[in-house]
Length: 256
Image 1 (cartoon, one colour):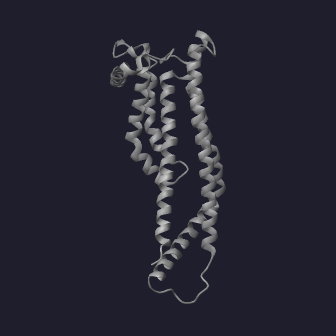
Image 2 (cartoon, rainbow, N blue to C red):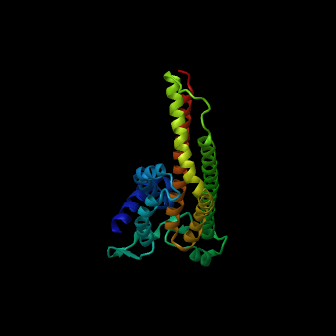
Image 3 (cartoon, rainbow, N blue to C red):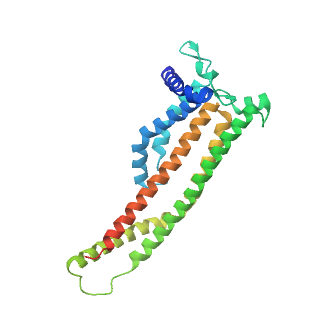
């Protein structure tokens, strides 16, 4: 933990000329971004797995980091010395304080209370964004499965096999359609479960609000940053996937 506190303190000192007393808070955000960049290859691999639980491994690997963050801003001493991080603030709120401390200092709309309300508002926006994207993703998966099943159930009317390049393309399309039909059969059995999971799982992001209300402000900042990163990262990966699929489809449709 002393290594972590030293790293965050050094990052804060680098940012202090620009951000003054909020430099350590910015250092926490920067530290979180560095952690997520290190985990990005795993997130990308999990996304390619295309399972409802995609991204669980990166999330689990972050738990030790979150635990260290929590301990660093909850302990009065680190390595036998006074914890220098506890004296740093985000605007008016000390990074080691919890929401209950802020309520005791100036109430819900006091100087410290407003900092926590801003944090909660930002987390709620990210959670809502995650929920909307999750529902859209579940709907698109269900629609794609239904379309693939309908396409796979169609059979060619002609007797002869097409020849030449056109025949190769038609054969490739037929093979893809057959494979899609098999996947559609699997999806048909799981479609309702996937739809329900797609509607419920994104709502779990709102649970971050409860966690942020009981942990130190520094840990709440970490939660906000990593949650926002997760949603933005998944949106970017989905965009790249859809763009690649459109490019592949255009190449297939090009005349010989």
